[in-house]
Length: 107
Image 1 (cartoon, rainbow, N blue to C red):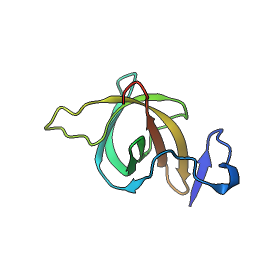
Image 2: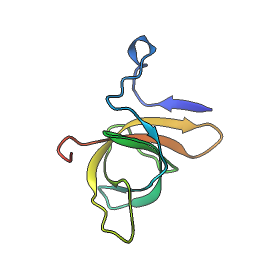
Image 3: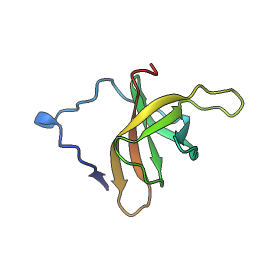
Image 4: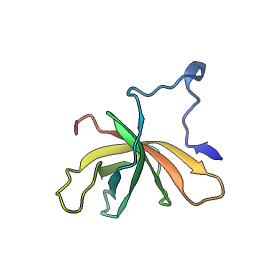
């Protein structure tokens, strides 16, 4: 069961406010905080504007990150700026789903 956290209000008229269509796709991703802490995880879905990933880290809506999707340790993956725009707690787990949107300056 998922529980949404953060200050986001429910979408108007029950619709999806995302700008880009999402595709369920698991790709390796690198998520790096501006303090240098990083995690390599997998995406849950991707779109032109960002992606969703699961993590045990405590990230906040609005927090800025550097991300690489897809990530490869063999290739120098290009990291771009992104922001946390969605956070869903996974009940019974310390993990959360995070939605990130690429910064406009990066794309």
